[in-house]
Image (cartoon, rainbow, N blue to C red; front, side, top):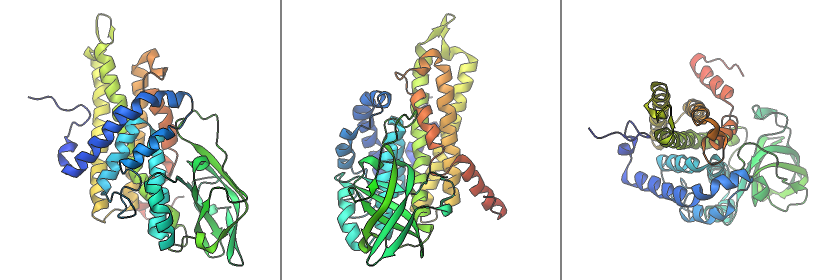
Length: 387
């Protein structure tokens, strides 16, 4: 019988439509040809490969699920596959697209005025503008209801004071979607780069997501007009709905990181010889490879069903929490095990598992820690909030 694809043992590819398969192949070629040759060097030298942004935009990967505004109008499965292939390259690159698409373009499209949509969405889709999402604060990201950043009315304007932390794209962003407490509740604001009192310094000395720009945002009496407010939402529903979109993409992205590690390990154990035979001839190695394949397959089927639910309008946030929790934990465990099986070579940037492992230490924390997602599922099971 024909051997199965080691990265797709249950032939998930056969469940894709022609368009979905074409999207995956297109992004996979981009990753193979443009990302993988440079990403190790970018990670080593802590450099975001901004030269790739025009290609990413030209492929229609920014705001891919939005109809109109120069966006591709693809379904949720396509967006998931985009995230999967990009994270096969590097979590930092997937984070860039995830933030631009799910955390910046989504809220503008869902909650923005017609003027805000017309001004920003086409520019963001074409990569002519970059956005960031300001929710997490220095004193604790897992409790957004304890938000300290606030905005007050002053005539026809709003004045924002506060700080945000661990913000992807912040330093390079042309516009920040900022969530602040007001006397009406939490509101979203579009704060443009260069606004007096707004600063977005880069966070240095990271050991994770080194090929991604991570920043702080500071607001010192930042004055914005009433037209900068997202009019379509009040309360935590706004930022939390954005996080649901982004977490969905993360559940797919983690699969790509795990696949990259497994493929590299399969190749390595075939050629590496110890005690007179290839590593993959040993039972212990085969058992560990099989365990990785089992967990990747489970994650693939979970995300595929999640995508079908999303496209059918039946997605529940708890389902996204379960997928993010399961799939990122899966990928992190596999990256660590692959690093171990590579021996001394596993700590070199020449091999991808150490890079994916370090990146995934951030992915398992941001947009809801593993514990937060476990408690979301626990609340769904018991009806009791243990937060």
